[in-house]
Image (cartoon, rainbow over all chains, first blue to last red; front, side):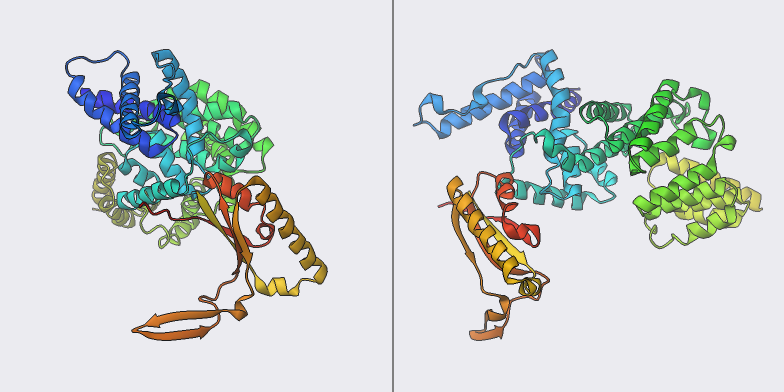
Length: 405
Length: 117
């Protein structure tokens, strides 16, 4: 109970303290000592405003330490951190909502490589844990931790300040900011946490940030594209999980459950994004999602158009995962055998990508090649820990074995 | 705090410049040095002779080994430096952008290590 309360208050309190101290390690250290106090005191008396409580305690401790160090100095030389901002619940929430986007921009400092920018934003501003971040960056927690340490050293020896960049510096930081928001949404959409498939809170937060960004930067096709993409994805959430919490594939979802308001809003945005920019990655992905979401049924989906969009996407961002998606779209538009050939050619680059095996198994399954399908489902099964996926794959394995007999 | 701005450029390309082009670059450096002296951030700054004048020294097991040439063969070579007093990396980057070679070479910006004593 207390732990959960601390956990939910932590990111907000940290965001506020980074703004006050302008240094991430100070903010973290003093928040840590405030958390220790909270563990002692909250069981007896829980404060109304937990975030404000943590911020106050952290900042008071800082002032105490500062005075101890500077005893000989006169009072007025204590830095401005002693001026406590408005910590009422309303003010805090309001400023937090504003601060958050600004802090992401702050973390996306161009002197740090992009992966590090995203890592800092996800960890310190958005409060994801190392496992979630490692998953988002297709890495492992050890590497993530190392990068984090290296980043902290670089920030501290170079005296990089946690200061909000000026609007003219926003554009050079935009790529990192967009990717951060995108990955935050992804973590919510297919969460690595054991408790379930979807973390709606993270998805909502990502959309809120994308909206806020869209208000600040009006006509950027990538900003519009990202917002549209997230809205289209979120539209499907009510149909993605069955009553037992199991994942339902796109082709089997009850499309009447999709959120129409999301789809309508996103359709307009997609059109605008495609008009503003000539095929930028988020806009193309949003267009693909739109084609799915506007189809009444899986069978009436415009797969050849989706295939073309994936090819277009492959031209701006040539990675094998996009080629895999393109091949799957090609199979759906009718040419299954060419698609299987194309997917098999991706075996080497996608060796460690577990969805490669599920995708190829799925293509064989649809093509009634059950022996091949079985083999790849078995490989897929070995490569996933996600309970939800395991149940699905196991079902297919049983079906394959049954039919093959 | 102090930042060392190491100036790297391709010597082979520099050698092909006309006198007029070199004169322009030289003037650019004069103007730049003057301007950072005025802001008060200039600590030191020098240009180096090309790497074909370099000697690399190593001492192994008490024996001195000399190599005629630079420490490493690279596309761009160290050609000079500025030592600047700046408040943060951001300020140092801002200043480094103004170094004439930034427009065709590269500037590596490194904070100086500070030893507590």
